[in-house]
Amino acid sequence: MSINKVYLPEAEKLKESLKERGSNSFYMFYVRKRETFIGSNKSIKFIDIFCKKYFKNETTEFNEIN
Image (cartoon, rainbow, N blue to C red; front, side):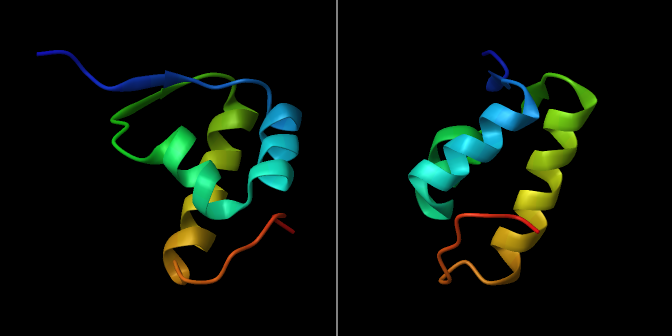
């Protein structure tokens, strides 16, 4: 059995992806069923901030993190 990991692009690419995909699709692509994130500190911090906002209210769609 292997660990479900994802290699994250740079934080700027993640911001663009969130803007294009929307929060629900972004979550499915980068976060869902992932156990490990591999990438820069900025990218991992972006995912952490995204998850906090996403799980605060999963039904509200958003395209940016302030």
